[in-house]
Length: 318
Image 1 (cartoon, rainbow, N blue to C red):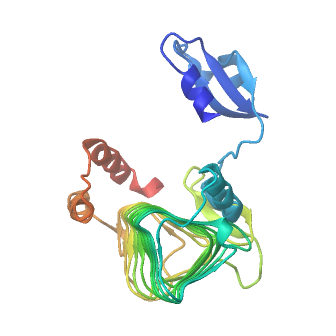
Image 2: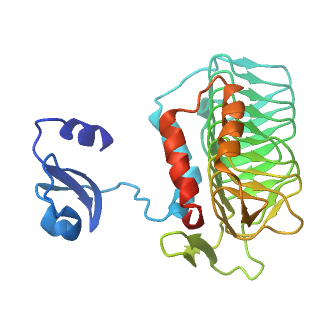
């Protein structure tokens, strides 16, 4: 679908839109009417193509729907990968090895267990599974990422350049984020350049087993998520201190620096310093980001600066 949208949305191409049921997926309007925003979608769109089978993200917590299934599908979309091009050291154990791909430059160290009985495992180039770590598929470990000694991970996707330790269950960790130490992360979504301090734990299930509510910035309120399991949602460049305890269904914005006793609030706006009452000043936040990114040879672009400045100015709603 994405390929067809890109092909249709080119200069000189007529307008076209794509809908799944009543949900607008995309629209190409080379000459949009001046009153476009005042019109209903039915009035504004023509040449509508119906599509089926697409995963539609309507609320941010939809991002953790069916993580194991979507991870498995993503691995399969990479193509039929055969053989183990990386290094499997003596004492490592691979269960259902035909469902495991170990890319060139990756290393599986002694005592590590990779079990693909319940889904495929993809270890990308130059990634490392350290001693006695346990991986239960479906799992994707991105390029250059490290699964630390004794770590346990299942049904999850980890981006490139990450360090992951402790226990991770049905979660997404984006690129260059670290959860390098012991602690539990379940049914969670972690953005880029985040760092969870040693001993950080997340709750993903309420004691009464009821539906988890989550903060929605559009409604500026906690709303029912329809989920029984929901952990931590953390925006880019946010960090927390050692032994931080996140309650079930906690939403943390971007560029937060959290340190306190007890549980943080279940909604922390972007650019919070310790608590929502104190702002993490934009100048300092950007300097820290530049330093962190420079260690990986990456530069904070002007577009990123402009976007983050906008988020800072609107931090109460993020």
